[in-house]
Length: 632
Image 1 (cartoon, rainbow, N blue to C red):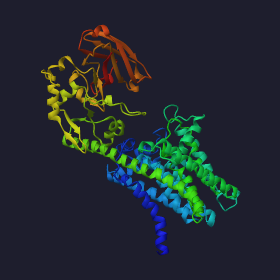
Image 2: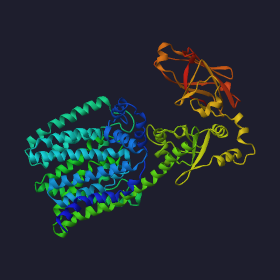
Image 3: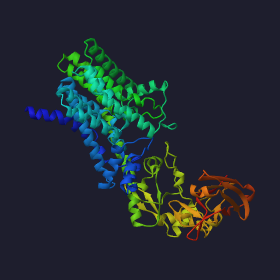
Image 4: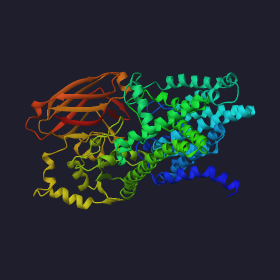
């Protein structure tokens, strides 16, 4: 084999390993937070809109214009909802990371074995599985690219003395803040290289990093001002003993897959691999330090430094946070392999056995996790694209989906995927029994489940179509579902005979499917809400034990600045409530006890009166309403 072929194989085989290991990732569709980023394109109409969506803090105060907002806006604008370009970009970025890790390891150690093994160890770790399958986690491999590129440029500067490398290092490092906040640790990583691995005087090397340290400091204060730390939820930082527990978790997940037991391995196997690798790492580090070879401290510093800012997140520990820290352990493992490659067999076994145990634990789980995500996201793709096709077939009609389980809901509908596609009025069948997904900001399935009476009215008035989710497509079952509802599971009375005395117990005023329950004075719906003039009525059902009328609405602040609103509610002509809405309260929630008025009734007429009202173009505008309901 020629030197050119061997050299090409040295560079390309780790990339081939990446493609082989995560090959299912090419076929993975969008899930979860992806739909929030896919929605941004609908909000961009002007240059100002683009700047606003690119740089406004969101998602726990993050500002990541390149790795989340920019990549989604660009690729969706070019390719629509085709996920393959997103996956190709992820694989290309990860491949670039691999090549740079190989270059860095070779440059630092001088060993081609180390430079080959390090990227393989990094790639194999199951912590990268989510990064290689979930488009929203692209920020991890993108930030890795900025960090490793900046350090490579800094090393070239120290080797050649050419200022262009120093300036490009500073540019690349600065751009890294647009990928992920953890980019702030670059000066510390570069300083660790200067101290433990560099060949230039330490003082001069650290002095040349002062501008980068200044940029990180300025970024920290600007970011804290623009996006203060959360005070509640899973991203609250806890500076207590939980930090040490987090470190233990991340150390374990660095050596064995987080999901190792889920894929058939026993707890004993997990403990064995963790213990074996921990002893191997400790032994190698101690041996190196005894021989005054301090390079290993740089590798350990690379593992610890990017991990430190994440340790206080005690309520949000996740293995993909290890993407960047793992580079340090991968380079450490590669260095050990390089040193013992030509050693006697017994000494070589001290490295080969731990690496073999690591790959034995990691590769099957990494493959399994990737394949699992491929299967799950295909169901999401079937649902979302199927609904888009149904909308094209039935423009203007509401779409009701049957057959969505809790897992599929959590991956898709809980994140409002149809806003990204511009499809409105998508609901779940009344028989859907779904558990609310865990996590802040997710849609409650109860808000999407239509009341049977509303669904029946919509079907019989040609306003609704019903689709069933099959294995790989959506099937129109409106006709069969209508017969099923009419039969009412064997009842001799069709549902139409019961709707008069079993109206919905909640009315979504802004939803056109509920319009048949509203009086004639209501204004047309606007984006899920509806204005009333000075007076408006509606019919609503009373559940068993119903005792309170709940009103949810909004009064624009500009109106409240003129005068507070007096709100009166009558039920079947009897005054049930009287209240005022004051500034600065604009969104309002009111509960009116009325058990005496509701006693023995199955439905009532509710009249709402408001004073004063605003007038525009001879139209009175009183209040905006969302949901009105009768509660126990």
